[in-house]
Amino acid sequence: MPPLHRHEEEKFFLNARGQKETLPTIRDSPTKQLSIVVPSYNEEKRLPIMMDEALGYLEERQKQDPTFTYEVIVVDDGSKDQTSKVAFKYCQKYGSDKIRVITLVKNRGKGGAIKMGIFSSRGEKILMADADGATKFPDVEKLEKGLKDLQPWPDQMAIACGSRAHLQTESIAQRSYFRTLLMYGFHFLVWFLCVKGIRDTQCGFKLLTREAALRTFSSLHIERWAFDVELLYIAQFFKIPIAEIAVNWTEIEGSKLIPFWSWLQMGKDLLFIRLRYLTGAWRLERTRKMN
Image (cartoon, rainbow, N blue to C red; front, top):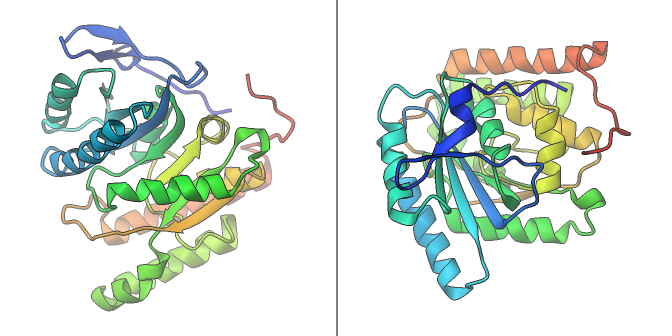
């Protein structure tokens, strides 16, 4: 299992009064129904739009159902702007029981940031959601239904992945020929080397049971863009049921994905995933019991 290194400063969060409190761990018993982990890198401009929509939905849902409990964990992935300060304003407004900000000492990559958030979460179910707000937040109910339809869950493990595959024809019409070629090349490598049966591995809207999050992220090595592929590779190895659910999605300006170089990095990571598991450099054990 890859070690999870935390700097001392990353073991705490600031409560609404600005005082340090120790973060919980995913091995603790859950105390919330839903945790939302939002990886954020230089997102001071886009984050408020996403947070306003998400919290509007979550607060209204709690008003309709007082038994519903949630938390939003914003993980500032070593930003150079005011991302943490912007996120902390929501903590001050809603309280640190609902909003927590984890500020990483240095940039780890999207997968590394999500892993840190998941390992500090308190939810029975854990949702990954991008800071750009490209996916409409109420679609979490579609993922919840997709998760429910997978029951019975083996060892309480199941994953529902948001998918943009149904929008592919429209998106291709808006992309350049070069970007379309890169996309098809990446999809082929994903299918050929790692994950079969999932049309859209890269959508940032995924819902996991707590047990599935612990099992998969405990074994995760890749910390940058291709982490989703390794996540689903691990899930399929452990025979965790996966649902792919169509969600509403809108292209948002300000993406951190640099078309050629990011795809090149992801292609290299896909080869590493395949080769390292094939050669035994990385190992997964079906009989390993969860503590």
